[in-house]
Image 1 (tube, one colour):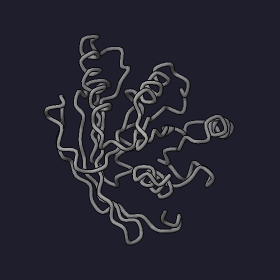
Image 2: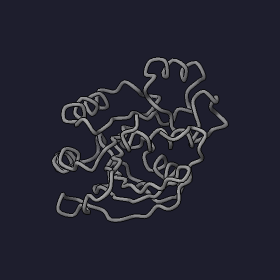
Image 3: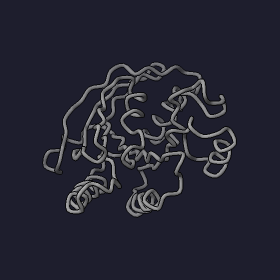
Image 4: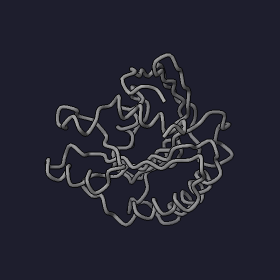
Length: 210
């Protein structure tokens, strides 16, 4: 495993395609990260921060996005270059979306998550202000029900900077394996990490090094 002091750079990131069904998904030629989260959890912002480009677009209307958006990014860690795919999945749990459409999304997303073996890392984004919602618990249980030995699940707390210092400390103590989205480093204590450390941790998890 690379030394944690080794610098990481995002060399490039680009959009591949949007898919509304399995037939429209691109070939699974690279290891992939799947991003899951409730509507308005800050998923697009997190992806853009992680990839170093404003590549993931968010809709002004929560729950409107119906496609899985595929990206490819190349990172350099020390002398090593790694290319991998990212899948930005539609946000779930928005009440104003019709039930029939929610069910349609469910079939596609469940099939994609279960039957795309190139997904090596599932990133479940959770709003730090609401860490115990039943819907997020169900998502965790769903992922655990089919995950394979070469796959990992990682929880990421978004909007962490909106918590008080006491609430931040309590949440990290409660779930020490979770990571924190570092959108505003100046608002967080160093012990909660940096963007570089977050990127390295996720890259190592993707490559099965943790």
